[in-house]
Amino acid sequence: MINLSVALATYNEEKNLTHCLEAVKGWVNEIVVVDGSSSDKTRVIAKKYGARVIKTINKPIFHINKQMAIGACQGEWVLQLDADEIVDQDLKKEILAVVDKGSDRDAFSIKRKNFFLGRWLSKGGQYPDSVIRFFKKDKAYLPCRSVHEQMAVPSGKTGQLSGHLLHYPYPDFAEYLEKFNRYTELTAKEYQNDPKIKPNIWHYIIIELRAMVDFFSRYLRHKGFLDGFPGLVFALFSALHYPVAFIKYWEKENGSKK
Image (tube, rainbow, N blue to C red; front, side, top):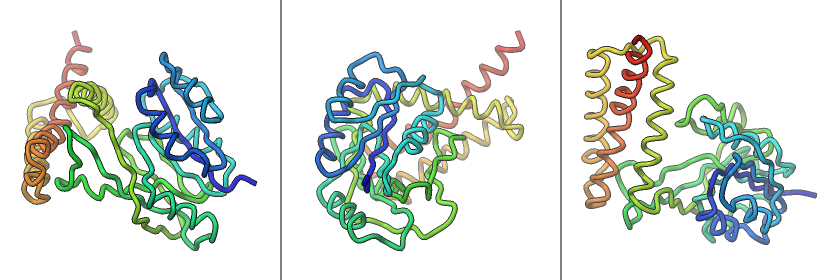
């Protein structure tokens, strides 16, 4: 009987995947990895840990592959992870207790600690950064409409676990900028499909004003300044996401008219 499955979607994650799977080795019943045709050793590493690997294409909205992995799981409970996340010991104990004793909750939020520029971010809205990642099979899903979306739980009760996912999304700032470029590109495409947004200066000004509000909210209201220089950089670039995405959107719209 499969009580607990782990679901991951991957693409060129050989640097992270070993740490992620090492943390769940030996206490989960099944690991399902949907890989978007990685060109590195990601699939080799996954198979080394006994994962069932499903190869597919690397889709623009990565949540599609995540949902594919969730759907392929056979366990009564599913723990959905990203390759750059590590389950800590407290979270492991809590998850096993729920699987063993059962629960009247259908899904659980898990707190994440986010590592950025050499430190754990504790402010600026980056902690506890709760995400629904542990749930009964078929009780939660990803809508797969946006790169920014969260897990949906249509019905049932949701609980909160006290353990942590240790999140290492950016080993260095260069990789942060690569992901920043990729995510703003996806948001620009979302703008193209949004009839409420127009490629003109007034819409840009509105988005720029929202970005300023977002920066001061993260840096002052949510005390991002207490995280020092990393807190300042994170607040600044988080706020810049939408103006940069709008500039890319403007370029796509105006370039297509030439």
